Image (cartoon, rainbow, N blue to C red; front, side):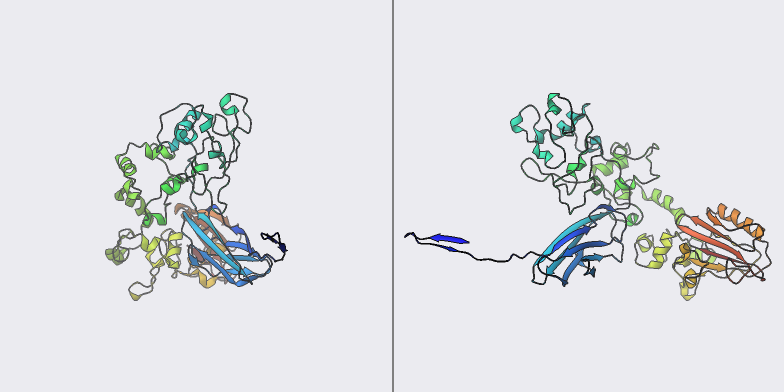
Length: 499
């Protein structure tokens, strides 16, 4: 309504009605998570119209700035997209969803998630933070905290300058007088004293993934200082939000195809130890006596080769790149993929950063034969059996064939039913099953394989052995029928499927 009155006292009221319209609602966004461990996560959300139906043709979904072809279910309102190619690891990814209804009202929602498959180095203790944020040493944890934040918190008895909300607007703990005045501690005391309390971030952007959602120690600086926490300074300015893994990201190189880019993550992986044989922590590098390490830290140089000299790295990796090339092939190509110059030219990216599925499978399954990727060098079909696949003597073996030819056969294990597998057959011969079984159990163990399953039994006319080695599988069959795991009146045949 609207009321008006003129100078003569004439009055009038106008009344009218209208119907408000609201744009569609977006809810259930996923993932909004730090540490998504799959590189092809399904991105999804639900949309619902308010007053007007959703215009399904209007929906636009982008991932990292690229519009993607999404799927939708008009019955449930769900919209989703699954990447066909792996996303970058150790990275933030941004999703933007825009939806309109039939009247043209539009709503847009933006959220982020972070992919990571590596462990994080422990970084909760404030003593690790003060390696860079230096303060006078203190034996009292409360004093240590005050030293770091003296200019912001104004501790020292002047309550007029104290503003507890400077911090407690951003963590889920109330401030208590007993913290400073000696009264009995309670669960409402704020967490920066000498007793453990649990606290969490609050008033942060819920569409941004936080790495730490609950304090891991009393003084967990990351809670307020991590990206996305939203914590502000006393005068309303943003804090210097940063995070340890991101600060320690190495320069992109061929190393990052296999190793974590963040130095704190790479050094926290299982089996990583410092020169003294102890597990890595912040002090391992920042208090190191190595001139190489000290120089890298002083110069803020994050390249892997700043601390790991190329010669050392090459020696460590050479064994994993040895090939089965012999004779004339080795004269030109050598015996190691790292120093092969006709094709690889010392470039790790050729194999470790590629869209070629054949090469991807070879790297994943740790294949060591050049013919696993180069099936027709010099225009001639070539193949070779891997050096750790023993071939029983006394029979003639054929050439390895792609296991995909037998996809769907009951005898082929699921683990080997893929393009990365090979199958090889022997000729038929009069073989002793017990002797063949003994040969393969011994030879496979010596080659580093672990036996997973065995169907061998005394008196049985056939057997199957299933092995695993790192990411690879192998299966060995002895049979007298037409196919593995069958009996018959024929001479025995051996068959091997392997990565």
